[in-house]
Image 1: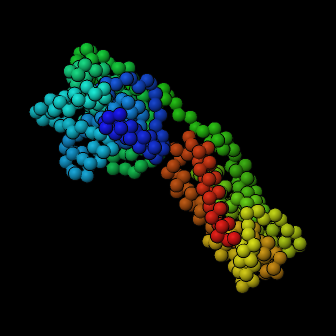
Image 2: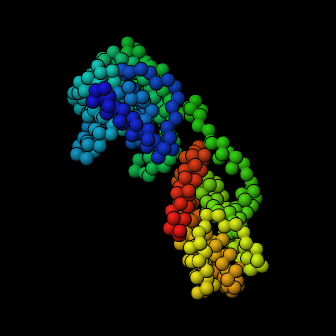
Image 3: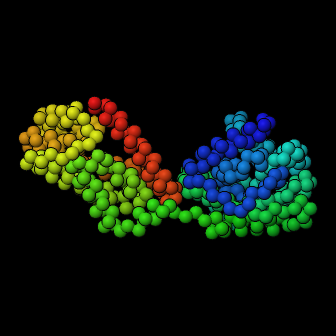
Length: 394
């Protein structure tokens, strides 16, 4: 494999790996075989990343990049050369097309793809595609390769001009190639209209919500609040999974209902702790999985020093059910213990809810489509966290 093919493969792997950061890339239509000249609309720097993630590496894609912007500053030149494999192209001036032809010819001769944005600059999302220049069509005709239109949608929301990255997801739709012998005869407006039609027809590249998200979305507020309350109670009595995990698994995908869910979990936790303490005082002992003798000893010592010792639980990793049992069995003043619990548990759970809400709101478009993956990843992280906590308290 030549150096150019290795570089193309490395770029493809890189941008495919990073594509979840933009919410993923969805492809519609058939990707033609190279060599070819590919033309697309341009609203964001994310356009190129999406194309490089979508195009198979054997198409050897190379971007025609504006020389006055990308190659005028050393760090930009280094970035665009390494990560995109760009060709420096003058947007205006005498000899601009001849320079493009000279730079593109070796790429096409090697069986590659030259990517051109005929608008010449980034436009605004959700507005008509700007006027196309004719250079890409001339290039395809002169080099004897087809011109392939591509419509890109979503990148203007993923990474808007002077904006922040959001994982909205990107759609690319490939159109039918225009034979080289027709490229000169076709008006650039026809090509522009084709690209805009490909961009605007999102129904042609469907992107459904995940089944798990759809199931959660159909649950009523009452169902989610009840489930959160019961989770909070169960975790305070015996359930080994922390109360905040309900916010991660259910509240994050349903971020608009996260406040109600977090409140219900906090309320359930307080009720569960007090019920557990009263039951322990009456001689009931519930199973306490994933706890250690050192945890129980530490909780007893902290509550013996003060009934407000439960506040240590917010940061030390000991499950709250351990404190509930220790308070009941150790003769702790349950009134003051209950008051402390009613402050400490909601403060921690609602605080975590705020942090989750900030992230979930940003990641909402991605979460809709990747709820199952989110649950799996969160479960793996939780398992590792529990392992570390238990090892610490052995």
